[in-house]
Length: 602
Image (cartoon, rainbow, N blue to C red):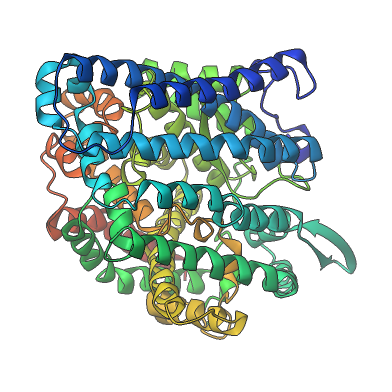
């Protein structure tokens, strides 16, 4: 059986052989110089907001030259950034990596400022005429359309430049503070009379233990750890939300939420339809939680029981098991998907094991066109395998975007979960088909747990963030106030499915998604992604071959049209509650099946 220490680390040497290597020094210098050269080009071409501009041959040539160069630089900087961050996220005490990331921040600022200038320039052009006269513009038409909207919500060039420069010591610095603090938190947990200090990621992983006393001890240790570290984290959250509010107001957005709807390529009508359907399913998920409590022999679940296994699984689900299962069952969809996953494992794209200094959770990041790296904290369980499949879905999405330029491939969060949910669903169906009754109950429960975490928990995060923004307009919020808002959000969503005296008031400190001034509301897109992915899978089941003809093209186009337009290709209307209800009905059926299985065992 694979132990945590034996789990694979990702291979970064293929990018650069190390921070102190000549190759990295050359690559870093080249990246910085590329931004310098881009700035020189922007200055010489006068790329900034224009008055009474005309689309002539010179303008077309300038657009094509600048766009081509900008795309190239974005790719180069992405590789540098992901390479450096890969070391920071797997060892936050790597001082050299931290120093290089800090050094790169100045280049990020200048690139961001150039992006702002580019958007302002495009916003002042007759883009319809430009598209008529330029094939490059036609290929980037959605980017031009978005630039028009974003340009209408820009401050003066001087204000945008100042905001970008101050972000280094503002939102970005506060975000890094959260990441650095939380990755280094440890907590003492007593198990079988022995007290040991664990990284906070491992403490949270004890939530999967079948022993309730271990779960309770870890929960209590975790709560104490967050309480000890709450002061700087509250300062970070208050500062980031204030920055988002100020910038939204200055840019004449109705709210930070309105800004994110534009960024995520959906409208308020879609969000309202989504949440109207979601709220109606809270009672169904509360029934699931009550059924889980019955199965565990509890009157009601505490927060530390949410992740508890319902049965003792006989399946080992070692990392090797997960790898083989994923590759085999991805092959039931297509050989292309299976071969891709096999290559990701073979080429060491995955950093799998939890360890001190490594950030918790899981993510996938593209490091070069079509090539990704996956961070995980693998737990030997179906859930661990499902998470790997999910992140491999992101990597497959990145591979399908390989043919697109950086500006064409900018995918909103709402669509970024499309392939990951689809791949996760492939694995779930395969696992259920190949399992005995006991394992089926286990898999179904883990699947519902994941859906509950997205539909219910993420909805609570959205409610919490709305409340924080509303109150932050007046003043800073204390730790106690943040805790109270989090508890209220959890009560609204989990209802009587969880013991209200055993919730998680410090969840605002746990989730890094709250700590971004550039991307507030890093939550509702996950609900959109889950339900959109389920809806697509249902259409795949109805007409597999027809679906396959369009799916990869959809993935390659997620930065080239808004969500509603892309969904319409599959007969989906995202602005009506009916579609979201149909996806939630799939989950309701799973809940009914789960309740029946539980009643049979009770």
